[in-house]
Length: 170
Length: 212
Image (cartoon, rainbow over all chains, first blue to last red; front, side, top):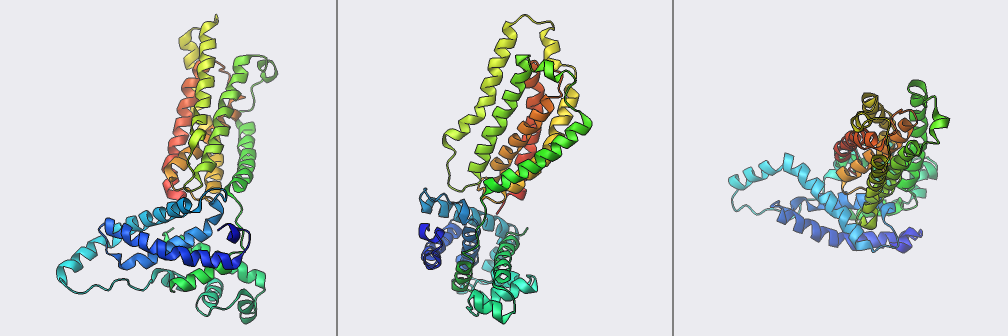
Protein backbone atom coordinates (compact mmCIF):
# COMPACT_ATOMS: atom_id res chain seq x y z
CA UNK A 1 0.00 0.00 0.00
CA UNK A 2 2.89 2.35 0.65
CA UNK A 3 4.23 2.08 -2.88
CA UNK A 4 0.66 2.27 -4.17
CA UNK A 5 0.32 5.49 -2.22
CA UNK A 6 3.45 6.79 -3.87
CA UNK A 7 1.67 6.46 -7.20
CA UNK A 8 2.68 2.96 -8.25
CA UNK A 9 -0.41 1.80 -10.17
CA UNK A 10 0.78 -1.75 -10.61
CA UNK A 11 1.49 -2.14 -6.89
CA UNK A 12 -2.01 -0.91 -6.15
CA UNK A 13 -3.59 -3.36 -8.57
CA UNK A 14 -1.61 -6.22 -7.05
CA UNK A 15 -2.47 -5.15 -3.54
CA UNK A 16 -6.21 -5.20 -4.28
CA UNK A 17 -5.85 -8.59 -5.95
CA UNK A 18 -3.91 -9.92 -2.97
CA UNK A 19 -6.35 -8.76 -0.30
CA UNK A 20 -9.46 -9.96 -2.12
CA UNK A 21 -9.19 -13.67 -1.15
CA UNK A 22 -8.56 -12.61 2.45
CA UNK A 23 -11.61 -10.36 2.41
CA UNK A 24 -13.66 -13.10 0.77
CA UNK A 25 -12.75 -15.61 3.48
CA UNK A 26 -13.42 -13.10 6.24
CA UNK A 27 -16.79 -12.17 4.72
CA UNK A 28 -17.87 -15.80 4.47
CA UNK A 29 -16.85 -16.37 8.06
CA UNK A 30 -18.77 -13.29 9.12
CA UNK A 31 -21.87 -14.37 7.23
CA UNK A 32 -21.69 -17.86 8.71
CA UNK A 33 -21.32 -16.48 12.20
CA UNK A 34 -24.38 -14.30 11.67
CA UNK A 35 -26.33 -17.36 10.55
CA UNK A 36 -26.53 -16.12 6.97
CA UNK A 37 -25.83 -18.18 3.86
CA UNK A 38 -22.53 -17.33 2.17
CA UNK A 39 -24.09 -16.94 -1.26
CA UNK A 40 -23.93 -13.17 -1.30
CA UNK A 41 -20.37 -12.92 -0.06
CA UNK A 42 -19.08 -11.63 -3.38
CA UNK A 43 -21.40 -8.61 -3.38
CA UNK A 44 -20.12 -7.69 0.05
CA UNK A 45 -16.49 -8.21 -1.01
CA UNK A 46 -17.05 -5.78 -3.87
CA UNK A 47 -18.60 -3.26 -1.52
CA UNK A 48 -15.59 -3.56 0.79
CA UNK A 49 -13.18 -3.09 -2.11
CA UNK A 50 -15.01 0.05 -3.19
CA UNK A 51 -14.84 1.45 0.34
CA UNK A 52 -11.16 0.55 0.66
CA UNK A 53 -10.52 2.37 -2.59
CA UNK A 54 -12.56 5.49 -1.86
CA UNK A 55 -11.29 5.82 1.72
CA UNK A 56 -7.65 4.85 1.20
CA UNK A 57 -6.56 8.37 2.16
CA UNK A 58 -7.76 7.70 5.72
CA UNK A 59 -5.01 5.13 6.20
CA UNK A 60 -2.09 6.69 8.05
CA UNK A 61 0.91 5.32 6.13
CA UNK A 62 3.01 5.08 9.28
CA UNK A 63 0.47 2.66 10.82
CA UNK A 64 0.14 -1.06 9.96
CA UNK A 65 -2.17 -1.66 7.00
CA UNK A 66 -4.03 -4.81 8.13
CA UNK A 67 -5.95 -3.31 11.09
CA UNK A 68 -7.14 -0.47 8.87
CA UNK A 69 -8.24 -2.89 6.16
CA UNK A 70 -10.16 -5.06 8.61
CA UNK A 71 -11.80 -2.08 10.29
CA UNK A 72 -13.21 -1.05 6.90
CA UNK A 73 -14.19 -4.63 6.06
CA UNK A 74 -15.89 -5.17 9.39
CA UNK A 75 -17.78 -1.92 9.06
CA UNK A 76 -19.05 -2.82 5.58
CA UNK A 77 -19.96 -6.36 6.62
CA UNK A 78 -22.02 -5.12 9.55
CA UNK A 79 -23.68 -2.59 7.26
CA UNK A 80 -24.51 -5.28 4.73
CA UNK A 81 -25.83 -7.65 7.40
CA UNK A 82 -28.01 -4.92 8.81
CA UNK A 83 -29.46 -4.19 5.38
CA UNK A 84 -29.97 -7.82 4.49
CA UNK A 85 -31.33 -8.52 7.95
CA UNK A 86 -34.12 -6.11 7.20
CA UNK A 87 -34.88 -7.28 3.71
CA UNK A 88 -33.78 -10.79 2.98
CA UNK A 89 -33.45 -12.81 6.14
CA UNK A 90 -37.09 -13.88 6.35
CA UNK A 91 -37.11 -15.00 2.74
CA UNK A 92 -34.13 -17.24 3.25
CA UNK A 93 -35.90 -18.96 6.12
CA UNK A 94 -38.91 -19.50 3.89
CA UNK A 95 -36.80 -21.09 1.20
CA UNK A 96 -35.21 -23.40 3.71
CA UNK A 97 -38.67 -24.68 4.61
CA UNK A 98 -39.83 -25.14 1.07
CA UNK A 99 -36.74 -26.65 -0.47
CA UNK A 100 -35.20 -29.03 2.03
CA UNK A 101 -32.06 -30.65 0.79
CA UNK A 102 -31.96 -28.65 -2.38
CA UNK A 103 -28.30 -28.07 -3.20
CA UNK A 104 -27.61 -24.38 -2.65
CA UNK A 105 -25.27 -22.78 -5.08
CA UNK A 106 -22.22 -21.77 -3.13
CA UNK A 107 -21.83 -18.24 -4.34
CA UNK A 108 -24.16 -16.46 -6.67
CA UNK A 109 -22.38 -14.19 -9.12
CA UNK A 110 -22.22 -10.68 -7.74
CA UNK A 111 -25.17 -8.71 -9.06
CA UNK A 112 -25.47 -5.56 -6.99
CA UNK A 113 -22.68 -3.51 -8.54
CA UNK A 114 -23.84 -4.43 -12.04
CA UNK A 115 -27.45 -3.51 -11.32
CA UNK A 116 -26.51 -0.13 -9.83
CA UNK A 117 -24.14 0.45 -12.73
CA UNK A 118 -27.09 0.29 -15.10
CA UNK A 119 -28.73 3.20 -13.33
CA UNK A 120 -25.76 5.57 -13.27
CA UNK A 121 -25.82 8.71 -15.43
CA UNK A 122 -24.96 7.63 -19.01
CA UNK A 123 -21.53 9.30 -19.10
CA UNK A 124 -20.33 7.58 -15.93
CA UNK A 125 -21.87 4.29 -16.95
CA UNK A 126 -20.16 4.30 -20.35
CA UNK A 127 -16.77 5.14 -18.85
CA UNK A 128 -17.06 2.49 -16.13
CA UNK A 129 -18.24 -0.14 -18.57
CA UNK A 130 -15.46 0.63 -21.01
CA UNK A 131 -12.76 0.32 -18.32
CA UNK A 132 -14.25 -2.54 -16.31
CA UNK A 133 -15.85 -4.80 -18.86
CA UNK A 134 -13.93 -4.01 -22.03
CA UNK A 135 -10.68 -3.44 -20.05
CA UNK A 136 -9.87 -0.32 -22.00
CA UNK A 137 -7.32 2.13 -20.60
CA UNK A 138 -8.24 5.69 -19.72
CA UNK A 139 -6.69 6.90 -22.98
CA UNK A 140 -8.57 4.36 -25.12
CA UNK A 141 -11.80 5.18 -23.34
CA UNK A 142 -11.25 8.88 -23.93
CA UNK A 143 -10.77 8.48 -27.66
CA UNK A 144 -13.62 5.99 -27.98
CA UNK A 145 -16.14 8.22 -26.21
CA UNK A 146 -14.54 11.38 -27.65
CA UNK A 147 -13.92 12.85 -24.23
CA UNK A 148 -10.75 14.36 -22.80
CA UNK A 149 -8.68 12.12 -20.52
CA UNK A 150 -9.39 14.49 -17.66
CA UNK A 151 -13.14 14.15 -18.21
CA UNK A 152 -12.79 10.35 -18.27
CA UNK A 153 -10.95 10.46 -14.94
CA UNK A 154 -13.62 12.66 -13.38
CA UNK A 155 -16.46 10.48 -14.71
CA UNK A 156 -14.66 7.36 -13.50
CA UNK A 157 -14.18 8.69 -9.98
CA UNK A 158 -17.68 10.15 -9.73
CA UNK A 159 -19.10 6.88 -11.04
CA UNK A 160 -17.25 4.84 -8.41
CA UNK A 161 -18.26 7.23 -5.65
CA UNK A 162 -21.92 7.12 -6.62
CA UNK A 163 -21.81 3.33 -6.97
CA UNK A 164 -20.61 3.18 -3.36
CA UNK A 165 -23.36 5.58 -2.27
CA UNK A 166 -26.01 3.55 -4.06
CA UNK A 167 -24.75 0.31 -2.55
CA UNK A 168 -25.13 1.63 0.96
CA UNK A 169 -28.57 2.90 0.06
CA UNK A 170 -28.17 6.64 0.48
CA UNK B 1 -19.38 -7.15 -13.01
CA UNK B 2 -16.98 -9.68 -11.56
CA UNK B 3 -14.49 -8.77 -8.90
CA UNK B 4 -11.44 -8.76 -11.18
CA UNK B 5 -13.14 -6.20 -13.41
CA UNK B 6 -13.98 -4.08 -10.41
CA UNK B 7 -10.38 -4.22 -9.18
CA UNK B 8 -9.10 -3.16 -12.60
CA UNK B 9 -11.50 -0.21 -12.53
CA UNK B 10 -10.40 0.81 -9.04
CA UNK B 11 -6.75 0.61 -10.08
CA UNK B 12 -7.49 2.87 -13.06
CA UNK B 13 -8.81 5.45 -10.59
CA UNK B 14 -5.64 5.30 -8.47
CA UNK B 15 -4.39 8.70 -9.65
CA UNK B 16 -7.36 10.43 -8.07
CA UNK B 17 -6.20 11.98 -4.81
CA UNK B 18 -8.79 12.70 -2.15
CA UNK B 19 -7.99 15.61 0.14
CA UNK B 20 -7.86 14.60 3.83
CA UNK B 21 -10.85 15.23 6.08
CA UNK B 22 -8.80 17.79 8.01
CA UNK B 23 -8.59 20.03 4.93
CA UNK B 24 -12.36 19.85 4.31
CA UNK B 25 -13.01 20.47 7.98
CA UNK B 26 -10.77 23.57 8.01
CA UNK B 27 -12.46 25.12 4.99
CA UNK B 28 -15.92 24.22 6.30
CA UNK B 29 -15.27 25.66 9.75
CA UNK B 30 -13.94 28.93 8.30
CA UNK B 31 -17.08 29.38 6.17
CA UNK B 32 -19.50 28.27 8.88
CA UNK B 33 -17.62 30.33 11.47
CA UNK B 34 -18.08 33.41 9.29
CA UNK B 35 -21.79 32.63 8.91
CA UNK B 36 -22.32 32.07 12.63
CA UNK B 37 -20.39 35.27 13.46
CA UNK B 38 -22.58 37.20 11.04
CA UNK B 39 -25.74 35.84 12.62
CA UNK B 40 -24.29 36.67 16.02
CA UNK B 41 -23.41 40.26 15.05
CA UNK B 42 -26.87 40.81 13.59
CA UNK B 43 -28.76 39.48 16.58
CA UNK B 44 -26.91 39.42 19.90
CA UNK B 45 -23.67 41.43 19.33
CA UNK B 46 -20.78 41.62 21.80
CA UNK B 47 -21.74 43.17 25.07
CA UNK B 48 -21.32 46.97 25.34
CA UNK B 49 -18.73 46.83 28.12
CA UNK B 50 -16.58 44.26 26.26
CA UNK B 51 -13.31 46.19 26.64
CA UNK B 52 -13.72 46.68 30.39
CA UNK B 53 -14.90 43.13 30.80
CA UNK B 54 -11.61 41.89 29.37
CA UNK B 55 -9.98 42.98 32.64
CA UNK B 56 -12.23 40.61 34.54
CA UNK B 57 -10.46 37.23 34.74
CA UNK B 58 -13.79 35.41 35.03
CA UNK B 59 -14.91 36.93 31.72
CA UNK B 60 -11.69 35.76 30.05
CA UNK B 61 -12.01 32.35 31.65
CA UNK B 62 -15.17 31.71 29.62
CA UNK B 63 -13.12 31.79 26.42
CA UNK B 64 -10.49 29.51 27.89
CA UNK B 65 -13.24 27.01 28.80
CA UNK B 66 -15.01 27.10 25.43
CA UNK B 67 -11.80 26.87 23.40
CA UNK B 68 -10.42 24.12 25.61
CA UNK B 69 -13.54 22.22 24.58
CA UNK B 70 -13.50 23.08 20.87
CA UNK B 71 -9.82 22.40 20.13
CA UNK B 72 -9.61 18.94 21.74
CA UNK B 73 -12.93 18.08 20.06
CA UNK B 74 -11.36 18.90 16.67
CA UNK B 75 -8.44 16.57 17.44
CA UNK B 76 -10.73 13.78 18.67
CA UNK B 77 -13.18 14.20 15.79
CA UNK B 78 -10.47 13.92 13.16
CA UNK B 79 -9.00 10.89 14.89
CA UNK B 80 -12.41 9.20 14.89
CA UNK B 81 -12.57 9.72 11.13
CA UNK B 82 -9.71 7.21 10.70
CA UNK B 83 -10.51 3.51 10.90
CA UNK B 84 -8.47 1.45 13.37
CA UNK B 85 -6.84 4.54 14.87
CA UNK B 86 -7.12 4.27 18.66
CA UNK B 87 -7.94 7.50 20.49
CA UNK B 88 -5.22 6.98 23.11
CA UNK B 89 -4.32 10.10 25.10
CA UNK B 90 -6.53 12.24 22.86
CA UNK B 91 -9.67 11.18 24.71
CA UNK B 92 -8.31 12.64 27.93
CA UNK B 93 -8.03 16.06 26.28
CA UNK B 94 -11.81 16.29 26.48
CA UNK B 95 -11.47 16.57 30.26
CA UNK B 96 -9.53 19.82 29.83
CA UNK B 97 -12.58 22.14 29.93
CA UNK B 98 -13.87 20.28 32.99
CA UNK B 99 -10.58 20.85 34.81
CA UNK B 100 -10.43 24.52 33.83
CA UNK B 101 -14.03 25.03 34.89
CA UNK B 102 -13.51 23.26 38.21
CA UNK B 103 -10.54 25.56 38.89
CA UNK B 104 -12.70 28.56 38.00
CA UNK B 105 -15.50 27.47 40.33
CA UNK B 106 -13.03 26.96 43.16
CA UNK B 107 -11.68 30.48 42.64
CA UNK B 108 -15.19 31.87 42.38
CA UNK B 109 -16.25 30.24 45.65
CA UNK B 110 -13.13 31.35 47.52
CA UNK B 111 -13.65 35.03 46.70
CA UNK B 112 -16.02 37.46 48.36
CA UNK B 113 -18.93 38.06 45.97
CA UNK B 114 -21.44 40.80 45.39
CA UNK B 115 -24.16 38.35 44.39
CA UNK B 116 -25.29 35.25 46.24
CA UNK B 117 -24.41 31.80 44.92
CA UNK B 118 -27.94 31.12 43.69
CA UNK B 119 -28.02 34.33 41.68
CA UNK B 120 -24.64 33.66 40.15
CA UNK B 121 -25.77 30.18 39.18
CA UNK B 122 -29.08 31.18 37.64
CA UNK B 123 -27.70 34.38 36.12
CA UNK B 124 -29.72 36.91 34.22
CA UNK B 125 -30.24 35.36 30.80
CA UNK B 126 -29.98 31.60 30.97
CA UNK B 127 -32.77 31.27 28.42
CA UNK B 128 -30.90 33.31 25.80
CA UNK B 129 -27.87 31.11 26.45
CA UNK B 130 -29.85 27.92 25.86
CA UNK B 131 -31.22 29.23 22.57
CA UNK B 132 -28.15 31.09 21.32
CA UNK B 133 -25.49 28.39 21.68
CA UNK B 134 -27.45 25.64 19.89
CA UNK B 135 -28.60 28.04 17.14
CA UNK B 136 -25.13 29.46 16.51
CA UNK B 137 -23.70 25.96 16.48
CA UNK B 138 -25.97 24.68 13.69
CA UNK B 139 -23.92 25.99 10.73
CA UNK B 140 -20.75 24.78 12.46
CA UNK B 141 -22.25 21.34 13.12
CA UNK B 142 -23.30 21.01 9.49
CA UNK B 143 -19.82 21.98 8.29
CA UNK B 144 -18.14 19.59 10.72
CA UNK B 145 -20.29 16.65 9.70
CA UNK B 146 -19.70 17.48 6.03
CA UNK B 147 -15.94 17.55 6.71
CA UNK B 148 -15.94 14.26 8.61
CA UNK B 149 -17.83 12.61 5.74
CA UNK B 150 -14.56 12.83 3.80
CA UNK B 151 -13.00 10.59 6.42
CA UNK B 152 -14.21 7.10 7.32
CA UNK B 153 -15.70 7.14 10.84
CA UNK B 154 -16.26 3.52 11.87
CA UNK B 155 -17.99 4.75 15.04
CA UNK B 156 -20.35 7.31 13.53
CA UNK B 157 -22.36 8.10 16.67
CA UNK B 158 -19.17 8.89 18.57
CA UNK B 159 -17.80 10.96 15.69
CA UNK B 160 -21.14 12.80 15.52
CA UNK B 161 -20.95 13.54 19.24
CA UNK B 162 -17.42 14.93 18.80
CA UNK B 163 -18.76 17.10 15.99
CA UNK B 164 -21.46 18.34 18.39
CA UNK B 165 -18.91 19.16 21.11
CA UNK B 166 -16.74 20.98 18.60
CA UNK B 167 -19.52 23.12 17.16
CA UNK B 168 -20.99 23.87 20.59
CA UNK B 169 -17.53 24.90 21.82
CA UNK B 170 -17.06 27.33 18.94
CA UNK B 171 -20.61 28.67 19.19
CA UNK B 172 -20.16 29.17 22.94
CA UNK B 173 -16.96 31.12 22.24
CA UNK B 174 -19.02 33.56 20.18
CA UNK B 175 -21.85 33.67 22.67
CA UNK B 176 -19.48 34.25 25.62
CA UNK B 177 -18.59 37.68 24.25
CA UNK B 178 -22.25 38.68 24.51
CA UNK B 179 -23.19 36.87 27.70
CA UNK B 180 -23.40 39.24 30.70
CA UNK B 181 -22.97 36.38 33.17
CA UNK B 182 -19.32 35.71 33.95
CA UNK B 183 -19.60 33.40 36.95
CA UNK B 184 -18.05 29.95 36.34
CA UNK B 185 -21.12 28.60 38.12
CA UNK B 186 -23.30 29.99 35.35
CA UNK B 187 -20.98 28.62 32.67
CA UNK B 188 -20.87 25.20 34.31
CA UNK B 189 -24.64 25.00 34.37
CA UNK B 190 -26.08 26.62 31.27
CA UNK B 191 -23.21 26.33 28.81
CA UNK B 192 -23.00 22.67 29.73
CA UNK B 193 -26.70 22.07 29.14
CA UNK B 194 -26.52 23.86 25.78
CA UNK B 195 -23.43 21.85 24.81
CA UNK B 196 -25.09 18.59 25.83
CA UNK B 197 -28.04 19.40 23.58
CA UNK B 198 -25.83 20.00 20.55
CA UNK B 199 -23.75 16.90 21.33
CA UNK B 200 -26.90 14.77 21.49
CA UNK B 201 -28.02 16.12 18.11
CA UNK B 202 -24.58 15.30 16.69
CA UNK B 203 -24.65 11.78 18.11
CA UNK B 204 -28.11 11.21 16.62
CA UNK B 205 -27.13 12.57 13.21
CA UNK B 206 -23.80 10.73 13.10
CA UNK B 207 -25.07 7.24 12.20
CA UNK B 208 -27.34 8.78 9.56
CA UNK B 209 -24.94 11.07 7.75
CA UNK B 210 -21.46 9.72 8.52
CA UNK B 211 -21.82 6.21 7.07
CA UNK B 212 -19.47 5.56 4.20
